[in-house]
Length: 232
Image (cartoon, rainbow, N blue to C red):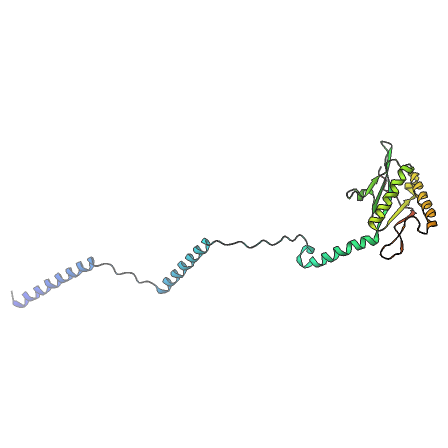
């Protein structure tokens, strides 16, 4: 064998040996880390930061706000407080100037064949007995006959109402008078009391106003055609 051929074979054997050594080295070397997208990494960090922030916020103790006062209606709002106060101041004055009406109302139970007379007072002339029962603004006069024992407490009630509401206006309706003749006796005695007290210059049902020093009427009466609120 020639020298050149021998050297060529040695060279090829050396190349094979070097390639095998290189493959063994590559197999034993750690794998290179994968390439990371910088934009994706940034987004992942932002998401992790937000998640951590929300977790910490939930751990904090939050004081609930003071509950607002319930508003039940338009005029219950605070801005109407002055208006309500003004209205409350005016109402007693208006009521005092108006006074009350006193009316009679028979209550007849035809099945039991019984009847009772009630007297009641109201600021609304159209109201009936059933409209004021809730407030207790009435008196049970029973089977009213118009005796002195019945009339004197009624006169005292007229005076009390006149002093309380400044004036009481007694309405004698003809239908009630037809059903209870004793009511006509009340009217007759009111007229007699006024005629008698005229001699003293201050008739019955009048008084001297201590503020104005003027004579004013606090009990007045009238016969009217008013339909009774009879219950059958």
